[in-house]
Amino acid sequence: MIHALTFYLFAAIAVVSAFMVVLNRNPVHSVLWLILTFFNGAGLFVLMGAEFVAMLVVVVYVGAVAVLFLFVVMMLDINMLSLREGMLQYVPVGAAIAIILAVEVGLLFLDWSFAGEAMSLRAAPTPDAGEVTNTEALGNLIYTQYVYLFQVAGLVLLVAMIGAIVLTLRINPNVRRQDIGRQISRPKSQVLAVRKVRSRGGI
Image (cartoon, rainbow, N blue to C red; front, side, top):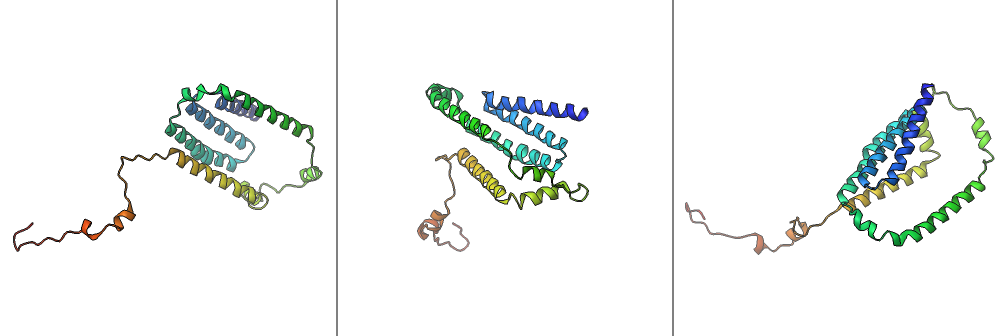
C-alpha cells in the first residue's frame, strides 16, 4: 500500500511539474519545474529497483543538464515582450504543424501491434538479481545491444554543450585580449631598445 501511494505521489508531481515546464511564461521558473520533474522521475526509478538509473538522472540531468539550461537562460537575458510581439503571425504555421503531428501519432496508434517475438522475449527467464547486479546488467545491455544509440546520445549532448557555449559567448571589442601571433611577429625595433649606460650612473 505504501509502495502504491508513493508511486502515485511521484507520478502526479512529475506530470504536474512537466505541464508547468511548458505552461510557465518565465523560462527560469520552467527550468526549476524541470528539475522537480527529474527528481520525481528518479524517485520512480528507485521504486522500480533501478537505483543506478535514478542516481544517473540526479547527477547527469539535475546536476548537469538542468543547471546548463538554467545557466543559458540566465545568460541570454531573453526579452519576453519582444518575443510576444510577433507571436500571432506564427500561429497558423504552428497550428498546421500541430495538426500534422497529431495525425501522424494517430496513424501510429492505429497501425500499432505487438512484434512476433515480443511474447517469447517476455517469457524468457531473467537472471537472478543475486547473480547479476543492476549496474552490470545495465552495462551489458547498453554496451552491446544499444551501443550505437548510446554513442548518438553522447553526440547529442556534445552538440548541446557546444551550442550553449556559442550562445553565451560575448565578444566585447573594448576588452584587451592576448594575440600570440601578433606578439611573435613584432619586429625587434618595437620590443627591444639598446641603451648605453654609464658606469655607476644608471639610466
